[in-house]
Image (cartoon, rainbow, N blue to C red):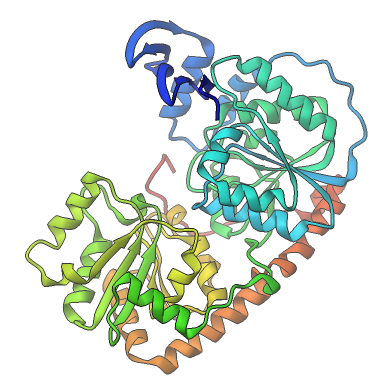
Length: 473
């Protein structure tokens, strides 16, 4: 560990930030021991402010502004190496949806191609995702830069030349939706190499910088493809199911393992357990939460049920929860735990899993299919970009538009073990036919091996009666 030096936008001395850059009102501000000592407005700082304020899914104008700020490069375009593929990522986390996507894809394609994973914030990835980075390193070479305001052009070009020298046939793009430097790399790669850029909009419910430079976007849902075509104004969409674990990599937990974990969590021996897990923001509607009001009803109506949530709530969110459960004995049976890398064992402790809402948790539902945990899903009819019910089989009986109906569905599953077993098997079969790693691998390999002719994979125009209320849609 370095005792001092620049890391991202901070100069740290024995772990203390002595100097720090930040963007305030379109200006770069330098802070010494958190006291502002210098300020300057630049094209780049103004662009960061515009991106921060942007609510429009059509980012073509922002992409053009980013393109104009790209430095010049001297690079001769060469034929790509068809045995190589690569990934461009901002940063990863040990708990997080797109981390799973990258990890499973790199694992599944290991042995079929030479793989390289590039990061625009590699140090933060090692800090925030030690487990995920260790897993990735078993199947691919990892490298990158920490691109920030400090020497950004030099670091950007260094990373560009690393990717261009590796010269893969395809670059899968998993950058954060607001990653300006990642978007600059896409612009440079598009202009100066023959690498096909396949954008994976993992944050599909947000505006995504850089889509303009892609040769295709990978879409897992009709809703996501609809947004990309109608609101991002990009029609080169390709359907690929979300890739999850291969059958041979499924974990195995004994009844004793699960019973011991349930006891450790605090679930009574004769109690039933419902569970949810998601980023904190997914449970709240502004200053209130229909989700927690529904959980309160569940616990007050069913005294043998304990509800467990895997998340991390800030003080304001915790105050909302406390207010909803004020003067209710049900609060004793609400257990909140932090995220954990052993989430699979936690999930197995649930008798019924409850989807988060108003924002659904798509990848969690897919995990539950293979783990054989029954669940209920909430459909968000008002904001379709927050609803991921299309991952389910079309006839799945436990997805609901109204919270009261969802509650009844939970209670039915809790009271009927035979029904739980039936749903478990139906969901597992849907997983194996749709999301299992080897199944999705065939589709991805077909795309990679025929990247020179991506048109054959384009989905065509998507139409639907989708409703959107947020983010300018």
